[in-house]
Amino acid sequence: MKKTYLLLLIFLISCSQGATEEFQSGEEVYEARCSACHGPNFEGRVGPNIDSNSPSASMPDSYWIQTITKGKGSMPAVRLSDKEVSLVIEYIKNNY
Image (tube, rainbow, N blue to C red):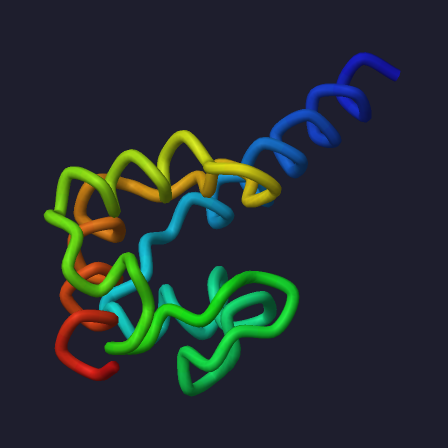
């Protein structure tokens, strides 16, 4: 019986380790974590537009970092690595 529990524990631990894989591009981050609310073309849906006409377009990176990692208004904080935050900010600024 103890062997069964041990095997089950090892199995569960090995399954959970894959969930921490990082995204490799800003586009991947945006599509997975941002586009549902901000739209695939930054036009806004539930969340505001974040295109070149939005007030946030001229904000410094520190504003974006704070907004993404801490949330703002009805936007919840998004759990991303520092690298993923940088990638998605660069992607948004280069494509809106």
